[in-house]
Image (cartoon, rainbow, N blue to C red; front, side, top):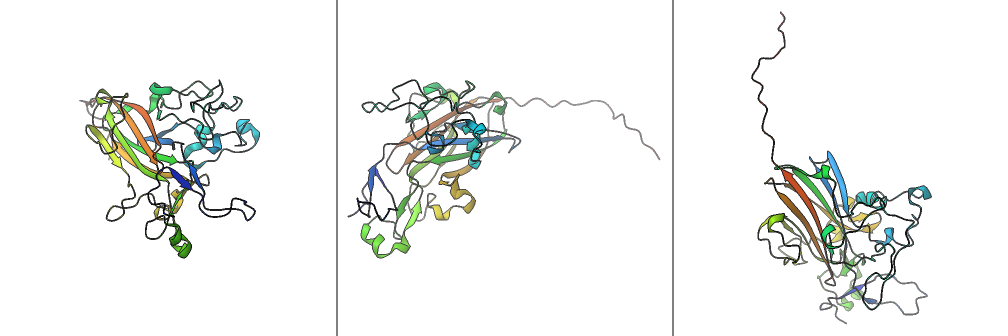
Length: 308
């Protein structure tokens, strides 16, 4: 059995001894898009907010946070995700999925348990409001800055499949795993992650740019696509710093990007994540920069006095 050419399946690792289906490779077709959220800091940490949609298991039916923080169960603090969890209207029942269309079929909450499967997450595409009626996809006005303002973006990508296994030679062949289990290594189940910042005037929200297209981007960062040498393999879990490998107990790929905006214009910050099965998620966040104010020159002497 050779798994090298399989592109739309993921594999689990552990089984119970009483599993009547037997041990081995369990292949499950993956149609779920990755979950994205982002921590944005202005002035390198002086002001910060978290934006994204709480759409993983922690935000689902069995999370245990149904009454919010009043339930006595604290929100998990990893990755600032608790700030998104605190905005969920837990009294609202989760929606159900129409099996024929794959879309939410009722009037309940259409996120959590990877329930929301929209390709594009943005306020203009399909906005999602929190318990206060504010958009999960918009930063507050205080996060806008001035030209040359330095920002720090910390991006988090979580897939419904926690990790993908490869043998020490970089392949997926079953025999190699059986013969050399010590060579098995864990990878975040991602093909590509791209961060781009573009001026809003040249940004077309109706189109999805190609992963390789960096034209007109003020910032373009693309992570590895498991290319091997000489390019680094960014998605290998063991190669990530220990403090960033897991978020709230789950393997969540995360990294930081710094950027100082060049112009006093409106921008779009876009994060694209593609998982091992080819499922794509795009998060788009607008930011506005205003001109830098002029210096105020005081043409007068100091009122200080010199004493001997």
